[in-house]
Image (cartoon, rainbow, N blue to C red; front, side):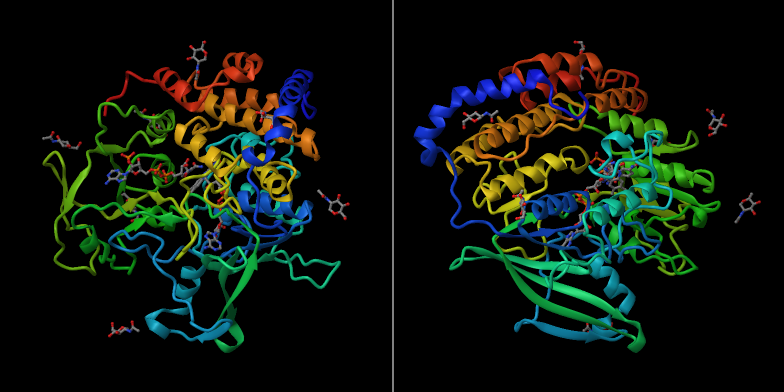
Amino acid sequence: MISSIPARFFFLVNAITAAAQQAAFSAQSETLFEFHHPIKSVAVVGAGPAGLQAAAKLVEHNFTVRIFERAPSPGGNWFYTDETPAREPYPDRPIDEGAVIPINLPATRYYEEGDDNLSLEDRWKEHWQPRPVWNNLHTNSPAVITELPDVKYSADSPWVLSNHDIQRHVRAYASFHNLNSNDYQTSSSAPPVTSYSTRVEKLEKLELTQTWRLTLRKLERLPEIGKFKAQWWTEDFDGVVIATGPYVSPHVPQIAGIVDWSKARSDAGEYSIYHSQSYRRPGRYQNKTVLIVGASVSASEIARDIGPYAGKVIASIRVRTPHSEPHPFQLRSLRRFPNTTEFVPEIAHFDPLDVHDHGIKDGIIQLVNGTELHGIDEVCTHRFQEQYCMAQSTAAGGPENLHWTGHYIPDPTLAYTNVRPWTMGKYQSYAFAKVWEGTAHLPTQKKMQEDYDSGKYSFGGFFGTHPSEALFRQYVAWLNNESLKNGGRLVAPWPVKNREVFVYYSNSEWAEGYASLANFTDFEVLPASQWPTRNQESAAAWDALVYSDLSW
Ligand SMILES: Cc1cc2nc3c(=O)[nH]c(=O)nc-3n(C[C@H](O)[C@H](O)[C@H](O)COP(=O)(O)OP(=O)(O)OC[C@H]3O[C@@H](n4cnc5c(N)ncnc54)[C@H](O)[C@@H]3O)c2cc1C
Ligand SMILES: NC(=O)c1ccc[n+]([C@@H]2O[C@H](COP(=O)([O-])OP(=O)(O)OC[C@H]3O[C@@H](n4cnc5c(N)ncnc54)[C@H](OP(=O)(O)O)[C@@H]3O)[C@@H](O)[C@H]2O)c1
Ligand SMILES: *[C@@H]1O[C@H](CO)[C@@H](O)[C@H](O)[C@H]1NC(C)=O
Ligand SMILES: *[C@@H]1O[C@H](CO)[C@@H](O)[C@H](O)[C@H]1NC(C)=O
Ligand SMILES: *[C@@H]1O[C@H](CO)[C@@H](O)[C@H](O)[C@H]1NC(C)=O
Ligand SMILES: *[C@@H]1O[C@H](CO)[C@@H](O)[C@H](O)[C@H]1NC(C)=O
Ligand SMILES: *[C@@H]1O[C@H](CO)[C@@H](O)[C@H](O)[C@H]1NC(C)=O
Ligand SMILES: *[C@@H]1O[C@H](CO)[C@@H](O)[C@H](O)[C@H]1NC(C)=O
Ligand SMILES: *[C@@H]1O[C@H](CO)[C@@H](O)[C@H](O)[C@H]1NC(C)=O
């Protein structure tokens, strides 16, 4: 049962297939999307949990694959380093500001300390963007739903793993599939699949060949001559997977006066306001008064980490509009703040500072309810902006107009990893490989767009909720349906035993009844026609979660 497909499921697939065969034959060209030319080579942007899986599947299916990853190692979000990211811009700035690309490619440039007013260290950070994870970060998802295929955790591993465990796990997956930074192909003279320290600067579709051109920039440190070497070049592909992750780029709240305060540094020279992306360790907060802006997951977890050190932790929370009920994750965060945390309302503005080299302790913060806050040592904000597109992507759309498989409807040679990589990534990766090798077919663009616009296949939901369960079902049924018709391996549904652990976890961590085995078991026996869509489900599911004991 655990790794095989339940008999019930076979019936379902066979029944659907038998009924549909004739229709499929007669109307194939009108109902199925056809590619301009066969997809042979695919670029994957990003070597996080999503990109690595997509690449491994595409390699298994004999595509010519290249992964481009701006960081020097695999892991994505989970590549922890003590090195912190470059200072975030104040005021907030959209991420897709154009990269500077030399006119004639390929090109090489050597940088020295201070070129363009940038230190080598900052140039390095700007290139690969160290991750927004801290030393003591632990997962807020249990191990069974934070696991990549092929490299299982041991059966007795704890529910909650440290960021370092996840980092090793993702690295192990990369190594297992020969995609790690020090893995080279042994059998041919082809370059390694993965090019690390390589940022995709631009993505464009070439009209003539109907292929994708990626403009790439690799940065190397040359410590022996005290310089950095940047190389720009282009590579062309038939298909592209964008796996650049949801949380790489910081978002600074647009609070009046924040730009002035962002210039303030402590006597020790450290910025007094910063984004949580730079948070690493609690030691520096000894006896300090720390204001955390926001009260979501980063806020509560950082508050817990610094709580034992800080003199005082204050959290500024935005007032909610009546109809936005707090999500159980936010309620969990509220519960997890240290019990000494003082909650205050939203910040109206920061009064101008007299000096910027003596911290912010003498500064005044105005709250929306008219009260002033004084004596704050540090302000930590946390918010990320979605980062699906790379800098200067000209032809690539955003994550809008995606078929539920992640294919970009206006041009399905482009696909985005838009599901939880740990749980659904393997299905999505297989879907990419099957669609591009021709053993699974997408509907016509018109049909895909209609489905998209109707919201019928917009399975928003998070793991463990009905909408996400519906998406699992959709993937498994569709992939197997297509394999039975066109060839390829069948896939098994998500193991029911994982659900059980997930239910225990979510009951204890989030909200009793957030997910229940009863709900899932009922769901399991529903005929496909009754699988819930997001629109039917979300209202009921969220209604069940409204808490009455909220005091903010
Ligand atoms: C603080 C924090 C804690 C989290 N905790 C959890 C948790 O407990 N459980 C959970 O399930 N999720 C958690 N997440 C979410 C996390 O994003 C996912 O777990 C997961 O890493 C997403 O995988 P991904 O491959 O889609 O993206 P990522 O892991 O973000 O990987 C994307 C990769 O794309 C690369 N990239 C981006 N742009 C370019 C470019 N232009 N060129 C080349 N490479 C590029 C990046 O360098 C990165 O390596 C957390 C996120 C944060 C910020
Ligand atoms: N494993 C872990 O423990 C862990 C730790 C950190 C993050 N994560 C994951 O990373 C993702 C991002 O989490 P996150 O907490 O960093 O970001 P987030 O969930 O986007 O939270 C940002 C918070 O900032 C608040 N905010 C923004 N501007 C504000 C202002 N001016 N005043 C007051 N509050 C303001 C937002 O409030 P509104 O809701 O009103 O917009 C929101 O609560 C999540 O998926 C999370 O699960 C996991
Ligand atoms: C990939 O190529 C190998 C060698 O030709 C072949 O044995 C294998 O079946 C191919 N894999 C897929 C998924 O087509
Ligand atoms: C470098 O900084 C100096 C002084 O701040 C400024 O005058 C100059 O224009 C800057 N140069 C570049 C290339 O940004
Ligand atoms: C923190 O405050 C306590 C009590 O006031 C004091 O004993 C201690 O020395 C302080 N520590 C630091 C690092 O300032
Ligand atoms: C607050 O938490 C600490 C330990 O984290 C505990 O010792 C203390 O009793 C708690 N105080 C209250 C009022 O709950
Ligand atoms: C405003 O909020 C602060 C912090 O929670 C509180 O101490 C103060 O009493 C509030 N002021 C008013 C006028 O409600
Ligand atoms: C299976 O394929 C048939 C024929 O293309 C189609 O009509 C049916 O909707 C498919 N079922 C699923 C679950 O994808
Ligand atoms: C689970 O099922 C119970 C009983 O039918 C229902 O009350 C509850 O709302 C369901 N929970 C979710 C998250 O759907």
